[in-house]
Image 1 (cartoon, rainbow, N blue to C red):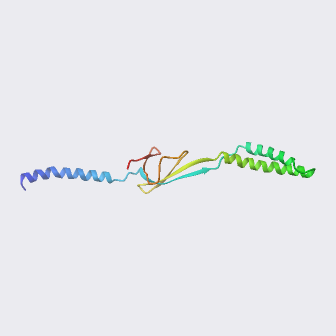
Image 2 (cartoon, one colour):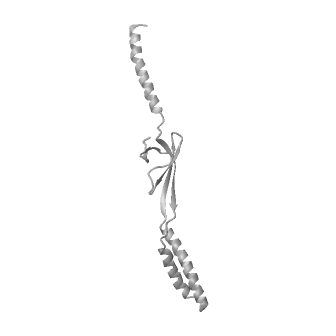
Image 3 (cartoon, rainbow, N blue to C red):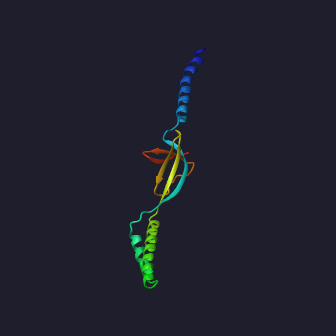
Length: 141
């Protein structure tokens, strides 16, 4: 081997090793990275404090007392109170519904993880993301 060829080999071999090491680290999987599989909105049933039931019961009793005579009047008052209480309870629960969003991520290590948000997140299906401190971060493509 000529001295020039030997010198080229000594220079090129370390450069080739550095290039291979860089390619291997670029291809290494990121255990905290993944791809958004889905983003779905859901509603949780609201809680009722009892105010709706009481208000509905009183209103129903008032309406029921206007119907019927004698024992029929008493029966209609009771039915009106019960129906109004039920309706008031359902209306209160409906008014207190909460929306949430569930983001499902397929991680590079094969896991599937879910993240919940109280408002619509900025993520879309197919986005590359990274988990840091339990929160999703959008990665540049």
